[in-house]
Amino acid sequence: MTLLWLPLHFNKRDANFTRKKRDFHGLNGDIQTIFLAGWTMKNFIRICVAIAALVCFANPVFAGAIEISPLSLKISPPGSVALLNIKPIDNQPVKIQIRVFRWVDRSNPEALEPTTDLVASPPIAVMKPLVNYAVRIIRQSNEPIEKETAYRMLIDVLPNAPLGTIAVGIAFQYSIPIYVQPSGAAKQKIDWVVERDADNIIVSATNNGTISAQFRDLKVSDGKSNIDLGVKTAVTLGPGDTQSWTKPVPKSFNAPPAQITGKLGDKPFKASAGAAQ
Image 1 (tube, rainbow, N blue to C red):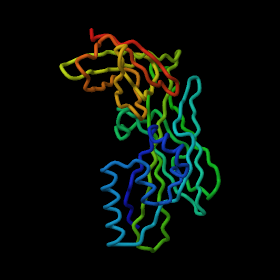
Image 2: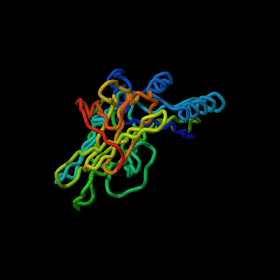
Image 3: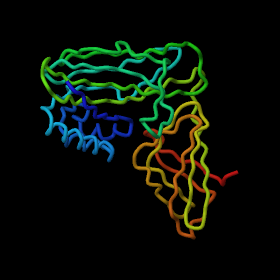
């Protein structure tokens, strides 16, 4: 059997969609459902290639559908284990392979490096249909860390093809974030800076804390008017990370200084932003 991989990168920004469309994490190979899940042009091209291969060469064999919870994991010292629940929701066994990678750029779910920091148990399994399974993610070291470290777990759901058949297997891949928390007290400290050029305002956020922060619905105000920064889906800022947003503003917009408002996690926040030092 020939395997044609169609990675489904499932990250925190997809979680809002999942709450609206409950069958998203129960994919059954429906191409329309995949498009609705927020596939990029690169993934669209992969799907087109897959369809061409299916039409030209063989019958499709799709991977089984699974349910996954939670959508992200945390390991908090002194604990060293996190649990992920997986349930096959089709009436067929599901083959899975699980690997864990260091996540080196939180703005890019594909920016991964090999690691032995965390391991999955079991790393490979054949799961019976409609049965809940618990996968353990184990931190190998007890050494303390000063800042949160991010990883991603890739779950490959492999297609079932009868022996002796000629088929193109469509495998799905889920990507779940894992955060190992600092050994000391967790601290969120976000510093905001506002800069101006002739036509734009540049708002920058730097995470000087020890754990990640998630923002959305960001606006900047000079006390008289508000400028929407266009952050409608959650942006994750890891410890030590900086991200900037640039928006055109009228000349009458008087900043810096400025006020930044939005949501930090699920809670509204307001912060002051000064000029760059």
